[in-house]
Image 1 (cartoon, helix red, strand yellow):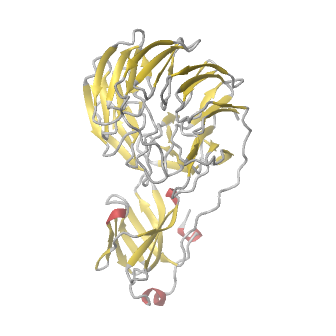
Image 2 (cartoon, one colour):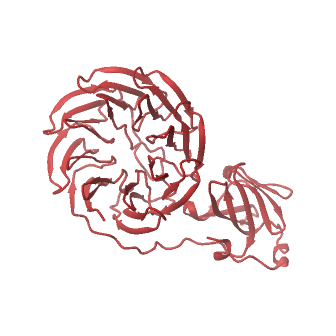
Image 3 (spheres, one colour):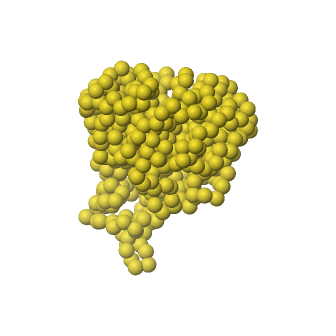
Length: 478
């Protein structure tokens, strides 16, 4: 997309000089680094009191003509807006400098108009669901699927085993407290954590309890999504099983290693923040993030810390370990690539103010990841963090994109009231280009949030998704 496609540059020098302040007017251009450059626009004008104000447009973050009230500092031809990390110098009909932050170069020119938000494009809906099973409560987790059965719990405190062909519930287990996280499934057992402070092991065939382990976080409070309170805490640690050991975090900040057979603790490691995600495990390490802003790598056998990395924001995403690197996002709008042996930063990619709580997936040399307010699925070069494409799916894409052949399945959630418009859906994208191929919309049901919070999961020729409203859906594989 080029500037001339949306904005007509002023050819009148007189028009620019006629203003009391040459900064006043509309400006359009680009900002970013060699990893990605985006389009951005500002309009500077005076309010009724004569105070200089700014209106902000940044299409990639779905913000158009946003009226900001931050102080605009003038120092000769230099313009500084600290809350926006903006520092530009006026020279004739150009503004140049940095936005957002000193590492992101910006260049804008004076224009007569700035783009407005485009309507939602019409695309095919794709095939309708094969079945819908109502589970009760809300479901924020990604279903775990094995041998034609989906396993998932909800805020109603019930854990469910559902046949993925017919949608019939095979068995249920009442934990007695909300279940926000996903499950780990083995050939004979199912493991999940509940907000009553326990990790459960159930028999996979009949759902009977085998044992439970106290995680010690029963008294840890949650703040669920709200229109005006943004410290959302709807995630929960999902257990991971590797070589008969279960690794699971807790809301009071500990990571536990537990013998899968006996339910006895092998070791415990404490952090200073909630652990609301799953671990990544390789031959030597267990890697995970904490709300204390750190990514940790521990020795698998002993739980001894090998390294930690400060991301400077809550880490609520599950890491990916691939080819000697750890890939992980945070609530500080960053996606990081770290050296798996040392924890040193290899690269970081800015997501333009959007949280990154999606866990990446890498295939054929491309990293795919969702986002939050950015509303986009992104394809990125994992070697250097350079963006191949970003595709707008019109909703929060907190889950991991599902790759099937040349297509990508992405679940999206919506929220209202909110400063970004949403349409919750299950969408399919072209894997090479990011082109949106189909979108099955999920209706606003009247609460603050609706749609899909977790990831789509494949079960044979079915795509299984769970909705925040508390239903499990099966869609045919396209």
